[in-house]
Structure formats: C-alpha cells, structure tokens
Length: 270
Image (cartoon, rainbow, N blue to C red; front, side):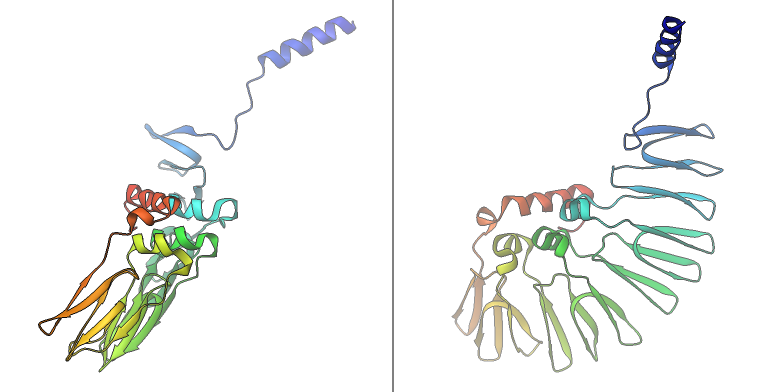
C-alpha cells in the first residue's frame, strides 16, 4: 500500500507542469495579436508587455498600458528604483513618475528625479539628461519648474525675467540675468564625466548681447567670451576674445561615458 502511494506521488510530480518564473519574459495572444516581454497584461482588445525586467504593466480605465524606465535611470538607482505610477483621465492613460493630469491630458516623467507641472490646460514634463544620473546616481537632485504666468519651463537653477523663464539642464549649470536677458550654461557631458561632482562652478560676464557664461571668461572692451570646460583657455587678439577647449574625453570616467552610450541607444539626450 505504501509503495503504491509513493508510485502515485512520483507520477503526479513528474506530470505536473513546471512553475513559471514571474520575472521571466513571456508571450500573450489577444485578438490574433501576440505581445512578448515582461509582466504582460491584457485588456479587451490587446495584450501589452514591458520590454525590460524593470518595466511595469497595468490595466487602468480598461486599457493595458506599460512603462519601461530608461536604462541609464535603472543603472543609477539599481534596487532602489521607486515603483512607477499610472494615471488616467477622460480615457487617456500614462505611466511613469510624478504624473500630472489636466482635462483630457496626462503626462508623466520618465525618472524619479523628473518633474511634471500643469499650466493653462497643458502639462509640461522634464527629466534630467543621462549625464546627471551618471554623476549623481540615485542622489540625482529633483528638478523644478517655474512659470511667469505665460511660460512654464522646467530644469535647474531657473530664473524669471521679462523675456521669459530659463533653466539649466544640469545641477552644475548656471543662469544669469543682465538687462532683462537670461543666459543659461551647462558644462558639456564629457566635462561632467571628467570632473563629476567636483565640477567647478562656471562664471558669467556681462556683454552687450547679454551674459556670457562658462570658464576662463575674458573681456576685451565690451565683448566677453568663455570656454566650455574648466581646462579651456581664452585669449585676446586684435580686440577679440578667442577661446579653446582641449578634448577631455580621454580623462573622463569610463563608467560615466558608458551611461551616455546607454542614453544614445535609448534615443535620449546624453
């Protein structure tokens, strides 16, 4: 009797289908259409799947929607990457971070450091470029938005003047107002990958056409110009300022440059 019981148990275990790993990719068929990927969900019309293990899919307002965070954001946060959210309004659904709705519109940032703001029925979203995540990692500062009642702009170090609102794209940038004109400057990605968090603060000089910002700024009469990197130089010849920046890519952090490559593959701004 005991032997028979063991035989039945062995046959049952052998015939049981293997348990499917919920984190493994899979495929779904819906209305003669196949979708493959991760965390697939189906609505009454179609199936949707995330394209990365960190992606998430939900059925909201009767629609299957998926969101995949950019690869450089995943690398920056690792296991600390917050869960995205989805919001719906008037039949429109979007997923990501810090989602904001307006009548008939919903938009989300692609990263936890991004920001979305509403103005006049529109929604504006901003995400820091990849180099910011490469330098700051999961400590990437949250961006901000400013409005003058007519124009809404998002980024870092924002300033408001009569000509509008301007912001830098990186925390290392600077904006300067002179005679009602705003100039914003950001160090190039290769320079940020070289100096990283030790990036020197850029300076600004006033000129007839507005501020000039950067490094090693030099003035000749009423004209000023600046180099784009801390290793750049500016010299005066024949009352003109000429600037030159040596290449910095060979001194840049390879890991930081690899993140910029991820962004290019994703079609994003390095």
